[in-house]
Image (cartoon, rainbow, N blue to C red; front, side, top):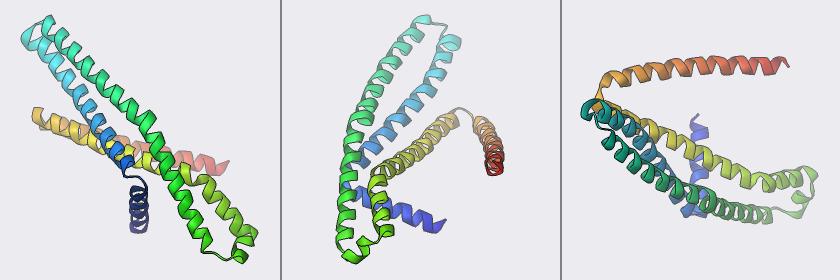
Length: 193
C-alpha cells in the first residue's frame, strides 16, 4: 500500500511539473462541486423553512429563483473548465510525457531498442501514456471531490443535529459492506467463467 501511494504521489508531482494549470483546474472544479453540493443541501433546508416556518410561497419562489441562477452560473463555469480547459491541459501533459519518454529512449543503446520486446513496450507506453495520465488525474479529482462533498455535507448537517451524522455514517458503513460483498461475488462469477 505504501509503495503504491509513493508511486502515485511521485506521478502526481511529475504531472504537476508538466502542467500546473491542470491542477488549478482540478482545484477549481472540486471547489465548484463542493459549493453545488452545499447549495443543494441548503436549498432543501431553506425550502422547508419557507413552507413550515414562514408559510410563504413568495419567499420560496424567490429563493428557488436565486438558487437556480447561482446553480446555472456554477454549471456554466464547471462545463467551461471541464470541457475546454481540461482537455487542452491533458494534451499538454500527454505531449510532455511523450517528450520525457523520448528523452529516456535516447539514453538507451540502439541494441536495446532493436529488441522486439523493448520496442513493443516502448510503443505501448507511448500509445497509452496520454489516456492513463488523464484517467489517473480524473480519478484523483473524483476522489477529492467525493471527500470534499462528504465534508461539506457533514459540516452542514452537524450544524443541524449530530444524530443525522450517526445515521448517515451507519448507512454508509452498511452500504460499503454490502458493496464489498457484491463486488466479491462479481469477481467470483467472472473467475468461474
